[in-house]
Image 1 (cartoon, rainbow, N blue to C red):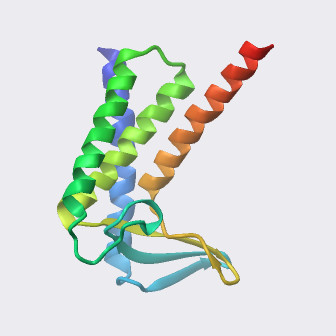
Image 2 (image 1 turned 180 degrees about the vertical axis):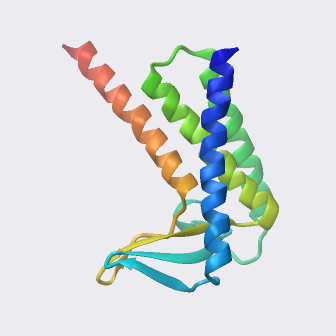
Length: 158
């Protein structure tokens, strides 16, 4: 029971941080407005109807329901993996970050039909697509899983 409560706490913390950051940005800047933080980092409010890096971001909105369904399946898939297999603490944290981030973006998609993105990295004329903290948690979670798997493969090879 304690493990389940701890897992739920981690997921809830990821969701809270994500949703708080998005609501804070929405309350301070207008859509497409840019607020410079550093010479390579701006906050800019963008509502992304597509998936990562604005792929499939069509203005029709026809992709919203399929992306909601895809998000639910991804959350269920990672929850199933979490519950069915033994994981190291790093792998478990990675899966929890992925689940929490996916839920954070799913909340946006259900409530407003788009995901709130606001972090914009750039260098001169190169711009990395805007993203949010949920995207960051998902990316960190995936990296945790990949690095752990890579290190496990290295141990097996020795």
